[in-house]
Length: 156
Image (tube, rainbow, N blue to C red; front, side, top):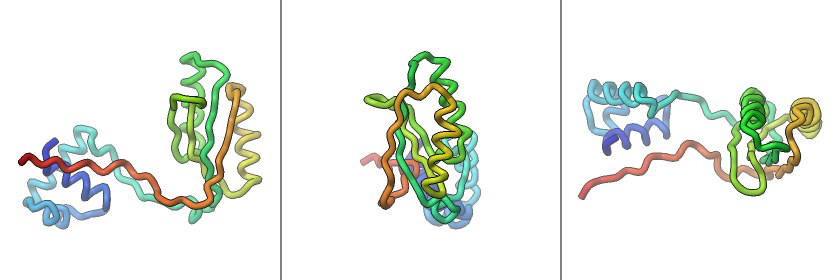
């Protein structure tokens, strides 16, 4: 990946709906060369897709939490089972396996406290693999984490 690819990634991460024409102008290449580079970045997996960024509150999920989970067992089968189930839970916006006091950290969004109770009691606890669960309620989201913008490295 060279500096031009880094500029392309940065522009598309800031605006995934940017037309090829506008992208080419922004990075100073011809439209055909820009399109070829974007297709190469897509083909290599560097660009894995395009998505709309949606505010949870605007789609009926204004209650956001960060939840930590510690599993009862640390065997690979139990971890894989937990991961597979969490991937399919609509309430979970993101989830990471972590080092430290908890095994997993999840960003969760639900409609209200009743929906949170149902999520915990009907979807999480029946799994039977969670030893400890803690949550922190989001009062205000200061910044929505987007994938990190690529650093622009220039050679001088």
